[in-house]
Image 1 (cartoon, rainbow, N blue to C red):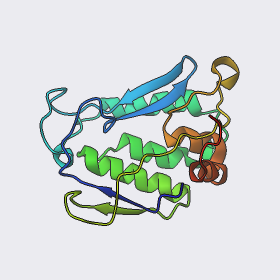
Image 2 (cartoon, rainbow, N blue to C red):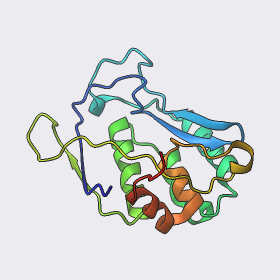
Image 3 (cartoon, rainbow, N blue to C red):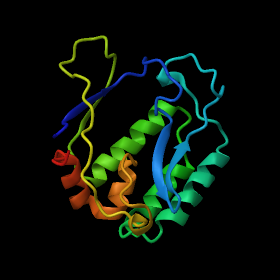
Length: 177
């Protein structure tokens, strides 16, 4: 599957437990859900474009420390550590903007020409919702202990495999049952 365009609607209602403020990384115990804390906590009833991340951001340094402790031995960590540190330690005030900045960064590193549209999904745009296909297994640094752990952030794939192999994984469909 080759996704060329995606549309993000800042007017989409923020839904807790939707993944809009979460990502999964790998640690020695398995999949770890990382959450970006939002102002107002769980009682959030507003559009995604207005959801604010907790500031100042002690959570950001915790996320960065976890990323360093877990991925510093990953084959491609050193290539992007400086950029990632700047992105993680200086989050945008709005979750929507932070997510877009990270997505743009990852697509640039993957050399994937994804056209990102920001607008209302209620307006006809020719874009349709598409689900990402599952990835075939790739090298993960705790694989000997845990086996392959699916469902992780594309950041795991990029740090483990590098941009060329990561892009190849994202562009192919899983052929196994």
